[in-house]
Image 1 (spheres, rainbow, N blue to C red):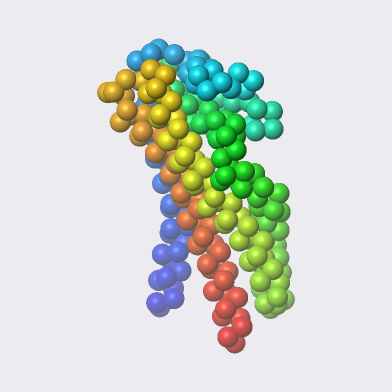
Image 2 (cartoon, one colour; image 1 turned 90 degrees about the vertical axis):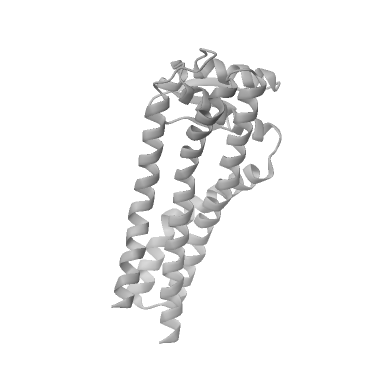
Amino acid sequence: MASMGGFLVYFAILLILPLWAQSKVKRTYKKHAKIQNSSMMTGAQVARRILDENGLFDVQIEEVRGVMSDHYDPRSKTVRLSTDNYHGHSQAAAAIAAHEVGHAIQDAESYAFLRFRHALVPVANLGSNMSYIIILAGIIMYSSGLILAGIIFMSAVVLFQLVTLPVEYNASSRAMEQLVSTGVIRNNEHGETKKVLSAAALTYVAAAITALLELLRFVLVFVGMNDD
């Protein structure tokens, strides 16, 4: 009964936490996407101003399809903003644009955690694709060796998720500094802008916790198999 209760708690966290984080992000974004920022600048203009203020004239800004599909591409040195944020004058547009530019600044300064995360991408992708297959094969074949191999692959994914946290929080911190120093937002907007950035960070926290729980589950399976 106790083990069943523990499984239910584990399953609830695994299922509910990501959904809650996504819901929180959507609610916060929807609210602040309706509030204009005081400078009346579009997300694209905010990004350009911050980039230019930091001497990153070679970094391009592009519009990309989708909702909250905003990202920075270090390969092409391009900040890509979703349509609403590219053209929008909202607090959400300014905050998200500044956050993505934060990644561009990290890239220009060779921020250690960003470099480490980039280095982890190939092995994390491999681990994401292979870990469950290997672990499932190990369980079916009752092979602790295969399960251990799958755990090692999965560990790379977990490490990637953990390294992502300081990268994202640092980008948000840089975003706030730049929004203030460039005059994009005023004092009465600080709190609301932080809400947008903090909500977005929740998705990465949820992803890291979920990945850790999954890894722990299979570690316990491996330990239990070796105890038999």
